[in-house]
Length: 533
Image 1: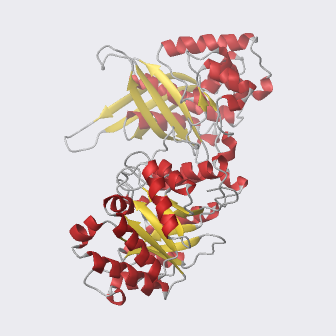
Image 2 (image 1 turned 60 degrees about the vertical axis):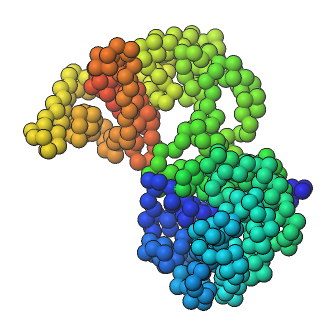
């Protein structure tokens, strides 16, 4: 089928299927905030949850009644009536039209095995349930989706019965027939073959695809179905979902629109918000972003090999499949002792564009040599851009120290087996001609040292008021006994608006922590243009 001008509808189920991810717990307010972001991005359909199934989803739909979305439409999710009930008498089904949603999506069994083993009813009764449930809803809501659960497994097992389930939904008035690979075990060429047969059998209906990722094929399976003519794709932001997840809309949307020439209804300016949408959902889900996530990960356009970096400086298409800015991402040049001069120069030009550096500048060679020395000691600057920025300024003679350490001392005290340990840090610093001596408590020695450093400096440098330690990681580097070896500490700091990472290495973990914290504070003061004494 030709893709020219073909419109693909985007159906987001982050708030329902995505919320079933192990370890993710959205409140009703979280779901509402995510829904607003999805609507701002331009999803056609936003599935909010199952009204009547739990208080959280009921609260969400109460909030959603206040919505004013220009494009997106809200969908309430549910199931066919239970085998022992009429559609008009099943309270979970009859709750759906009163939810305030613009459309309803119900699932029904399309695999005879599930009909017999899970529903514990016969095949004909299941067809009646599908037909009657859809018909009852269609008389009360303008749009009805039918999710044919386990459709592909059912079709492989018994094609005629799987198609008869879709026919029952169509006879009931379903507007969309969505084919679900519920177990996530079907492979792309079977998805394409079976979807093609459905399209032949139901030429007047929009067919959708709902793929799970149990074989790492949810995106590929969605593309396979859409390529042969499906017109709607269901998925989640970042591919979250039960077990191994759902089809990842963050990967699908740019692929469909930029690679396949399909129209997902997302303008280029909005597509630049893709990374922001991905990051926002990760934040709401309390998940760390996957750094290697296609399109939006921090390493999606990261280059380390010197040959690659040298090439992209001449023509970015040589090692990048798209311009990262199209999806709100950016190119990263990783700094490593294995990297060539091209990497270092590109990074220096990126951080200090006004310096006018070139490959023959002595400062570039000096920076390369210093990086090699530090990485031989265990430093790694790939994830510590702030420390590298300071290293660069030092190499260029442009770094100005804002404070000097005179000494620090850290105590960690525990009084009883059940009582929590308490840490105290004292630091003495010199700022110009002033000597500052401060102590602070903390939840552990790292937190105590961080608190003490900022407490000592905040009166002199008020910009540190809102700075805090966001995360830190410790890695043992030495091949000797772990308790004797060198350690590398990576610290992430934030001021509420931006984040930056620094690194410290030492055989003493607290000294490594201090070096990373020192860089974190110096970077904040430097980047904010605070003059040194």
